[in-house]
Image 1 (spheres, each protein chain N blue to C red):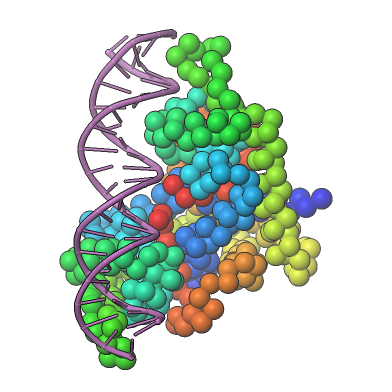
Image 2: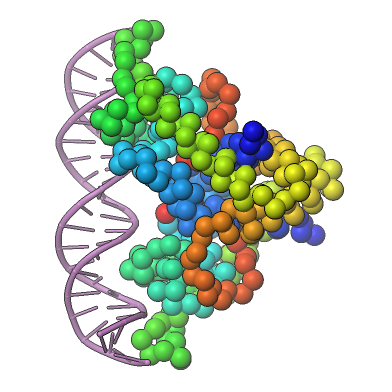
Length: 168
Length: 168
DNA sequence: TATTGTTATACTCTATAACTATA
DNA sequence: TATAGTTATAGAGTATAACAATA
């Protein structure tokens, strides 16, 4: 009997439910201004993961068409969170990069999420919390994703700072 | 230093990323027919959690407007996975319920996901896998969700069979 | 010829607001 | 009066397909 599999599947189901994501998302972006919403946030946080990046590459990273990236980047640019600069290595490309303000906002959302999680784990024995963090990490890295996400095999990135990519 | 919080936040970020959800979703619904897709699946699996249910209640459960539920339920009904029946307790309401075929399909997706997870945990010591399942469950139940989801406080449900509710 | 960013078009889906029926 | 399901409308967002520029 794959009892363990079912247990994890159920918990995962709760975790990935729309209401959960919406809640997490609003927690993260509350008070950050109009530019950062459910639509622009994946671009925003994706860019923080990859560093300066073309729209085409970022689209592959987050699973969106480059035309969609262009549109969402416009909003972030107007809000002063993102800037465009020509790619010195490729005359066709335009690099998208977070401004200092954008960087600061991303850092704030990361801190906010981490704090929220810490708070919700306040009643756990520290040892169990650490164990959980370690196992969850391994599960995500080796388990679920590795099992079938053959995307961008040459993903460069710079570490894997993952914030929550809400919605579509 | 909330190192643990950041670790979990990062893993959570990866888990909730769109590409991850899309992958999980396609795993679940592959070959299930046209009616079950990213849009109808939340209705489908939500109904499996709640049991026979009005469109308004189901909408509250999964975070969608009742008009949206109506439209998606139409598709599932045409595919023979869902049926409508008058609510004997309320002449205004129509109960949505899964047909036997629908029940079977939901069970199949649950099994599919559990098997996939079991497979991805094959190399783990069984003890660690069990520990992880237990901690993840607790995290989801007491931690993240409890910390801020004051929705449907009178949610009846019947157990909490959570399948993956993809997309919007 | 292939790929870049951007823009115009067609399409899908959504919530809002109607409507009728029942509590 | 309030809520049920359904339907029409208007709005937002997407991918597709173009475009000119560069590799």
